[in-house]
Image (tube, rainbow over all chains, first blue to last red; front, side, top):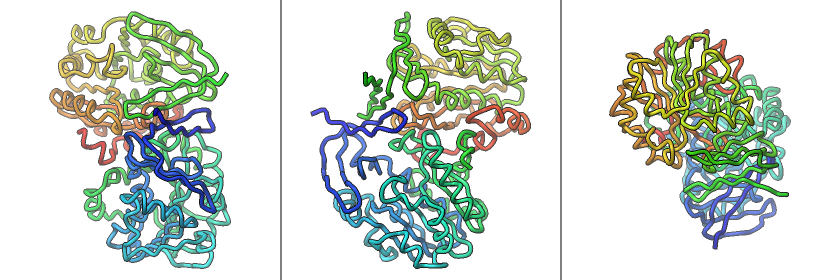
Length: 277
Length: 277
């Protein structure tokens, strides 16, 4: 059987992956969840028919959303992840010795459950003693916890569906208050080739709240355009204020994407992407 | 009519673009040539059914293959382009005041002819007095011209078909001899996510000939994986030995991709790509 999964994008383009079989298909109270076995890219997680990860390339997303803010902060002891139900971001966060506690607040328990069952190399940190998993609404959690975290990572789906509220100015105000005085927030931020309008709104909302806002990039083959961006919003530190070079050099030996050159290079933005800022 | 062009990759993935109509389809002595009008990405040039460019994103390729070597060299007066029949690379090269002469040696005159006819914004430099267009075999031309050029740009198709010889060690030796004593060569170099083996051969061949060999990257949505690489091979200068900052700053005002941050940042390689070097 010549079975292909195709994700169509709004700009009349599409990306397809040859599939061996469907491992799981279900519906949570929040979204459709599918896990497919692909021919060459390992397993694939879909939420509402959008590719969230391929086992082959998820490192390019999870390493970059986690290690950039954690190395931009001089002492990130307490980290909060909003979303990130597959566990890949948590897996990267708990690698840092300096992290004492990582709270992960995911609204959809079924994503966690199915990732543990079908994506064990991604969902490998749920037993880590540093990790506290809460199945709860991230917006509510952030509102209830003031002045608590050094780093907050927003590892959400797109701003349609359950994650819509995570791109609003009101939410970023609560994130600001949930961070300590020198806290840093990073959020997945779509792509500058296709979604400049969404990005413009998002970054305008961030700039209304945070004094330091910029963007960094990662090459991720199965996200639209292959160019993915992250918003970096900070109360006090620029990304390069506290280079813990020796920590980065130790960490990068174990990683597939992130390294010291990338830590600096990923903030270089092509001109067409700079307009978002 | 719901018409889509699909390019299938060897790793059982595919990329599709919705097409309004075919503008031109023909066969030269060297390859199949198609020019399509797409729904959202402007016109598209295909050679042997592979996407060479979309009007929407070609800047990300042409700016990066041209401006990086030209700003790495302190005084690139004479530039040679091998291939590049659509004219996009030449368009970028002649923008540099310091360039006195740009020779472009393209084996397939029909690519030039059809690009002039259907892709006028790409093929815009063919009337420039600094440009000498030769319809000839690049391998032969390079063999016959010793110690002539400051910068050589290999803007070729993939190492299957007419461009196969442009990835061999013997060819790189001739390129080395065709360059002046402080010359720089840049070549399109496939992508590190899917074609690590091809890249490994290519970079081993380059390292056997040039003392300085490295790689840089650009985000290009309609090349496989969206991550495209260029080989940088130099007789004398590292890419950052001669920063003509004010020239870069003047040039970048007119560009969509390249700028001073990108000039440095594009050489930052993820760990999985570094293995090629």
